[in-house]
Image (cartoon, rainbow over all chains, first blue to last red):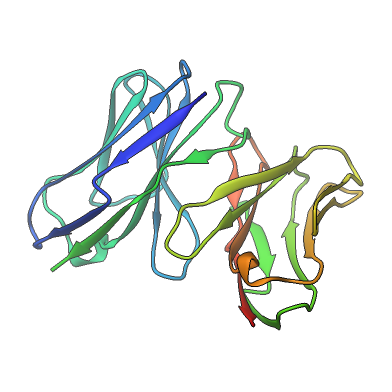
Length: 114
Length: 109
């Protein structure tokens, strides 16, 4: 069966520090991968999605970047964090059949910027 | 841009009462999906509807997809405290899934 791993679960970072969040998927090949951010009590904001290695699409201009160095690895990064980068970051995968397929989420990372 | 709108944003109910959340799109959807996010957790896929007018049930949950494939609803009969959480619909107006803003359900025991 497919599983998705996301870490760390929580992270407290100072403003201006770098960020690297990692997500890996097991049990499937060539998944579509997604990074979302969720503010407290709010909906899901799609940040990036990827349909293959090295292929990244950005949905909103921001202080963050994403990379997909391997088929089942998706990384969210920042060189300098802002206060507004606080939130709950969720990685998700869906099947290769297309972007309208059901998505399966990792446990998320709660990021607090001080 | 293309959006999927969901109402209400919040709903408080007494345990045992029914609950319904509605999802609407300005464009035809290829499918509609529903997710549940428990407090402190991550969204979990519940179900997908594909056909016009489709109705599916999962125990006390009833999911409907409109005839025009532009709207959907989730109805919970006789809510329980375990139903607490945020329910998201998600549809694909184009080739990408778009999530609604969610309905947060609170149940008073």
